[in-house]
Amino acid sequence: MTGWPPLRDDLRGLAPYGAPQLDVPVQLNVNENPYGPSEKCAADIARAVGDAAATLNRYPDREFTELREALAGYLNGSGGSGITPDMVWAANGSNEVMLQLLQAFGGPGRCALSFAPTYSMYPEYARDAVTEWVVGHREDDFTLDLDHARSLVLERRPSVVLLPSPNNPTGTALPPEAVSALCEAAGDGLVVVDEAYGEFRRAGTPSALELLPLHRNLVVTRTMSKAFALAGARVGYLAADPAIADAIRVVRLPYHLSAVTQATAIAALRHADELLAKVDELREERDRTVAWLRSRGLTVADSDANFALFGTFADRHEVWQQLLDRGVLIRETGPSGWLRVSIGTAQEMESFRAALTEVLDTPHEEELR
Image (cartoon, rainbow, N blue to C red; front, top):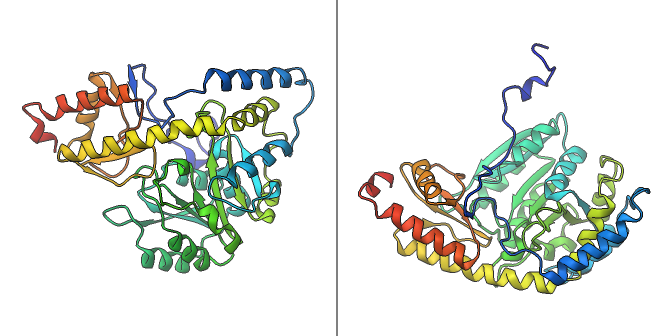
């Protein structure tokens, strides 16, 4: 052990995860929902939190029974069927849900596996849970080569396979046959389909929730940060075989969901129809954005999420910087040459289009491509 403080050797020199937080007029870099809760929804949340405040001298329900019932009811109307409260687990954002899965089912001598490009936090979950990280590849169009994927799973026998659908940062959704094939190949290993952006999927794109009755090793995760406009509340959850949900209780911290968090989430779920109506607007805005980007001669990945990955640029950082100089913040992420824009309000997307048009129409535009 060298140096102070006595940090783990594998953590020395690493920077913490996080996108740039900059105060600019148009912020389209972290896939937030640009539409906050309505006054009616916010008032309901405030009342629920006020009621919880009167009991904050007591620990919260550590099994968050009422919230699990509400989440099960919601999932049964959002692609699932027959989901019961004992199949549901929740935590502080889907990030904590994933970390708990790796803590419970990963560990020394085990590995977790995914296919790049994918969510940049996955290897960090594995690292934090002292789990070997194995990464395969996606095709040039960011779809999954099922033969390659199955072969790698059979070769490495991971205890956890992480499959985002829609994928971040590309927006690519997985077909159900791919999920089923990898569930079968994984044997006793878990296959986690991360549907953080599941509510934004295009018509006809199924949810992996439909496959839960077929595969006991399938886990489907969701979040309330995106579709429910609750990024600040930090609520994520999963649906899985009751034995999986029960096992996570071994590694969870005591009372990990505060009474305030539980009250906020339950109140928001009462307004699911209203909140999801904004999702329809964002889907339409996403499709308009993808079409416009392509009309400008750019390559855009097909997206079932609330963002679009586009490119390619010889110097993507320069494009990112020029947009920032014009008051528009997007994300420099994904494969080399690509940029990702979150879908905002119609006005925000108009600002994005105007700024990018200026960048692309500059005399040195060809040098950026």
